[in-house]
Image 1: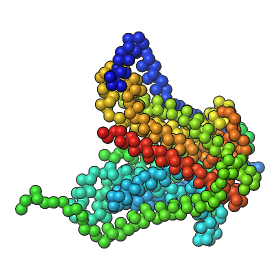
Image 2: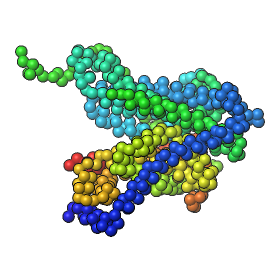
Image 3: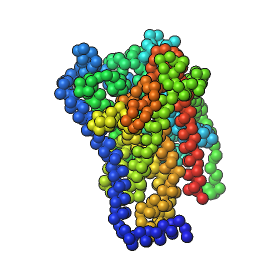
Image 4: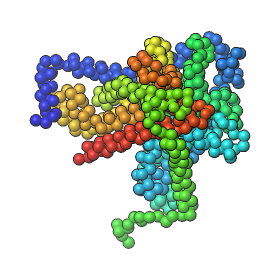
Length: 305
Length: 292
């Protein structure tokens, strides 16, 4: 008797004895597993909200949103969020300036312009690269890239925004390429063939037909990668420094929201102090920022026909 | 003039600007890949020179030449085992619920959306979650189990999404034949669908565990130590992990420790290459099962 047949006979016996309740309780158990993810989200919101509210008992929201200095560990601490946000945005901007154009071109290469063998070899390579932990990229930035850049860029400090920004951009290029490639492949071939039939060359087909058709998913891909850049920790923790500073100069040390969270939670900051609670409020700001970016990305995808 | 005889051109004439575009796009692929190869190469070169048995089996030390990775490797190994034990049953169970029992209900769709959101949350935020819930509220302190629980929550979306893919690929005919023969839904799932999806589910588990192996920031936030000379002796023990040790070494100013960090990177990448190879092999087997 086949495996399925044996099961069926067994079940006939089971049902005769135990009936539906076992099935029902199993279904409830599986639902509970699915509910763990809901509990995780609730947990995140509760922990961050609680910590943030406690923070705002001691620090006024005006200072948080209007002050331009972030010095929680000083004798006279100041809690303006902007240096951390500025650091995050500066590094993310550099990373995206590298990753978005390169990734888009790489995706075009993969999906339209490459010889067929190249694509089969490159896709797994991209996947492997995406699996390398960001810690390793951070080590790259500090060990190789910063010393190299210091010979080219005058005044580049040992910790700066340029080196981790570029390395993060290289890391994210693989992700951009994969996501945009998926989006390009989703465009029906008939659109390309229509352009070719009208006499367009590849450049015109890409610029006037393919990219406009895929712009929803390309935009979504860019937004998703922006969220990843904002949430990235290790590259900046290793190579960017620990000096919160509101600046557009990529040559000086700065600190991002993510690196700050890691720095303070490592230290001996006593529980219950505003400095300790700043972990939660900065994490809350970070969570909101990435949540909005991810949400925008997902709604843009849905609008695609 | 018969249009039926018209044959499609196999190659369009390449214009000049097409050639330029081709060159730029090729550079956009070759450039980053070349730079990355360089970066990997330099670090691997320096790391391999330092790698030796003492490094793998010794304890950390204030002297770079005597520093070792053993507590870090032990910590990582224990974390991986614990994360597997926690996240696989819950993750596969959730995947089974979504795919087999979901019925497209509103609740199921809400939970699905929730999983998608969780996949985009930065890893430090999971660390803060772990800090608030496991370290403080449940009073587990800076323990191995707190770190493992935090990582389990982090990788849970990966397990769920990838397992769902594996379950979806199982042909409907298999499920339907089970149900048609009178097997209950659970029996069909447990006895027929899951075994058929096993390579894909195993792939999802390995992907999740390799992600957990490389994570640094959430563990730092929940209290993994950076200088541990002993092996963890229980679930409530303090611990360290391979990425933490690498990060600690790379953060030191002395160049000898930087070399140690490079060696640690080589170890980490080797472990990940092994898991990657396992994934590739499993995916190949999964493909060959589905196609007759």
